[in-house]
Length: 256
Image (cartoon, rainbow, N blue to C red; front, side, top):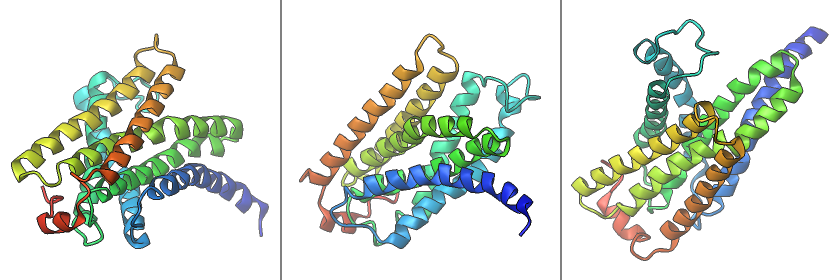
């Protein structure tokens, strides 16, 4: 087989592995917390839903630029304004949630409140995997493997966990409100969604606009949020006020 084929395929394969392997590690880590393992097919569906969300997210994020930026001629190079970052955060968090809500949360497999954050986290990991692959594609195709490895490591510790944290926070608040009346569930949803967007926006603002904040502080803050997320998942799993699967099935609280 022509050696040029390998030269063309290697960057693609490297970007794919660099994008998806870290996400699979985190996927295993979070799902081992579930005492009642979810069906692999439904987990895969949520993961693919997250991957699928990247395409409309990119299209919508490009479409809103004329409304949030004065100069859109160098889309990949400019430092986006706060308005753009806010719009991007809303788009990404909305799509990650909506596709899981539309294709996963109504299924019988979702039979306990803990399943809600787990499936939202799964979707977030799918989104992050596809996003990371796109970020790594350029350096690998340009022969800058070292840059790609460094970039992948930073995204493994930062951006990937940002997506997980934002979706996980929303999922936990939906789980906590699972037995509340529908009007209250909607309030919890909007509160959780606003919190997820706020976390997402704060991370991007800190890295792109608040240069006086050292990046190590930003990444440390993300890890602190991950620790808090794990504590929230543990509470969701063990609390007798939340973890009542038989009532959960009757109330169907995921239909908002």
